[in-house]
Length: 124
Image (tube, rainbow, N blue to C red; front, side):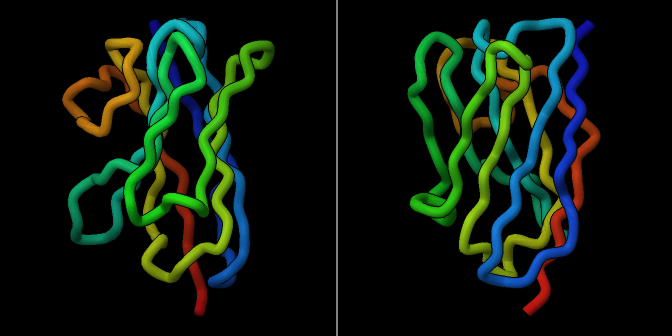
């Protein structure tokens, strides 16, 4: 059974940085694509970043390009999201997701496993 556990959320000032981590069990992080999504209050869950399963190809939402970086650690079987220059609209619950294909994709439909999420709150 695949399980994902996020950590690293918290309260941070706008302009600051935060690093989220996702511990994966039941599957190697290099076997399939991994992604990060976020859901703000009253809004739908949206794509943030993804990393392919067979190489280091990545994809990002336009809103975070140049500020966020997704990476994985094969030895620790974790996926991380480094978030820099955070903006107030970044307040949301951030979810880690494990894909059903090796291709990095923005679509939620291609992710089969989800973590419980970690809250990120931005203060202005």
